[in-house]
Amino acid sequence: MQAVILSGGFGTRMRPLTYTTPKPLLPLLNKPLIMHLIDSLPAEVEEVVLAANYKIEMLEEFFEDLDMDREVHVVDEPEPRGTGGAVKNVEEYIDDTFFVINSDVISSIDLKDYLEFYRKKEGVGAISAWEVEDPTAYGIMDPDEEQRIQRFQEKPKPEEAFSNLINAGHYILEREVLDKIPPRRKVSIEHEIFPKLLEDGLYSYQFSGYWIDCGTPTNFFEAHRTLLDVEDKKTVVDDRSWVDGELGDYVSVGMDCTIEDCEISNSILFDGVEIDEGAKIENSILGYDVIVEEGVKIKDSIVSDNVYLEKGEKIIKEDIKPEGVEDE
Image 1 (cartoon, rainbow, N blue to C red):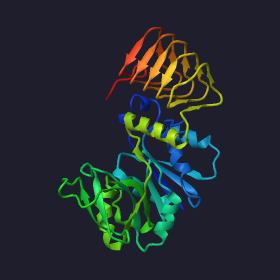
Image 2 (image 1 turned 30 degrees about the vertical axis):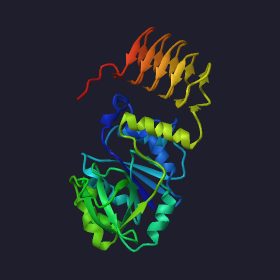
Image 3 (image 1 turned 90 degrees about the horizontal axis):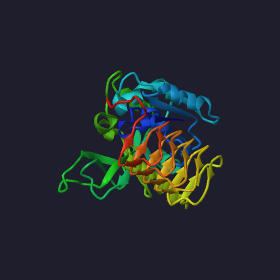
Image 4 (image 1 turned 90 degrees about the vertical axis):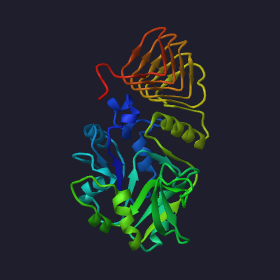
């Protein structure tokens, strides 16, 4: 069985971090975002297909150096083709029932249970469903008592919404669905293909717990805190790092970091970060190999890779780009 992970896009909302690192490789609790998804796949999934189009070489190199049981194919998408077009582009790797998962999503869904649920149904696919209080910003679905979807509605007005169940971004599909996707063009599987599958049997699988779209820094922080809570931890520090003193709550420290006696809270430090004594880091992300001198204060900010912050600097609500990089 295969799982297609939709990893396209330039990660513009996660800049400046994604200037140097593709979003699937951004570390969440010292583990690349993409590996949180891959490790959650049921044992039946023996192949993973990444539909990607940004920094392909970095993704290929990461998986080449990784020792894992599953085979991983990184497939270049020549140009953005939407969710449906991306799936169609990897058609040659699909031989039967398969998963499609949005790479931005971190959730508590049990994919094994989801697959078992689907196999008891007679249809061509299933969509994971998440209940929200306000569905007006989403597309919603209307399942019957057997969880078979009857209709969809896109961004309904409050008085017109027939459901609070939104698409949570995990699909199980039969290979025959690929025949309904036009080749070599942009296609939204949610808007153009799913409505056509209703008469063939498309089911919803509702789960509870947590569901977070990690496509923005705010949501990335939410996922960071949520996973620490799930693991009943306040901090995560890689074994190869050295920390002098106590860290505050909700802090993750990557590999080969050196942290002198300073104040750090609700922050994410990538590998190779060095922080001198007296610094204060709050609600911030520090990219790879950032050096922070004595007394620097960073709050509500993102600092990209290989940045050197000199003694006494104050970074408040700023995004520090790599040298020489300008927004497009």
